[in-house]
Image 1 (cartoon, one colour):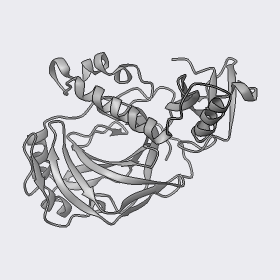
Image 2 (cartoon, one colour):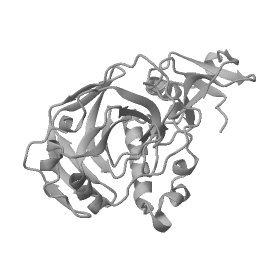
Image 3 (tube, one colour):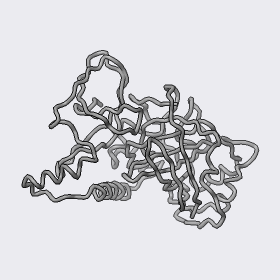
Image 4 (tube, one colour):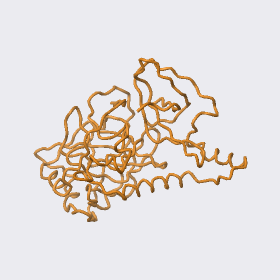
Length: 332
């Protein structure tokens, strides 16, 4: 998939603001360099928005600035552009940006619900791309095998989970814990609120070619609807994980919801050491939307075989196969 002609260069590895714009003209050999958000234009309201992340790696690339009128506009200029168009006599009406995001999210969710999907059979992972284009054609998909990494001075993950688990549900694809209270992840100068966490048996991401029996995904979202996932690995050990005891006391069957009376802080399921791998990826289930910040904890925790089996017995194998890394890099 070739890079776009117009691109916004991100000077930090992932998720930073875009300071200026450029167009690039690869001149062989052109193998590396910056992280680029792919842009798509919404003609109806006249501005650009980032729809995915694209990265190239190498040197030998030539860059030049675009004229002001031809640069893709960042999101925070959306309202200004709409207002200017109206003042010039355009028949367009202003559409609040938050309403746009909600409409896009609702459309994506509706599309995901419209087409049934599973991990096996005629609706299994090999067929996701028929109903969800990004699942089959996306260049930055998750999960991946974390093998080659680049050393970087990564900012600490500031995880402040003060709330608790409200209920545990089995949606037919995974066992998911819904939370309440203040549960925040602060990274890149932004605050992401924990929405839920769920389980995969076996793990979806690999580390150095190794797959773990269990992986937990903590899914966060910021005010703009951008997603950040913290992934924690679990290996089998002789002793169980105390944090799992209350959570797994009554594992719900398919399409069941179980309220949780005991107080379980989601932070109890995270390792003490917060060193991590970072990469740009996607949702691991349809619609496989890209542009997701991924933080995979380096330290694997221990859980008993019985605890892991209690989840696997109701979920089955719910791990998407590994996806190609393509031009992305993994930071540590």
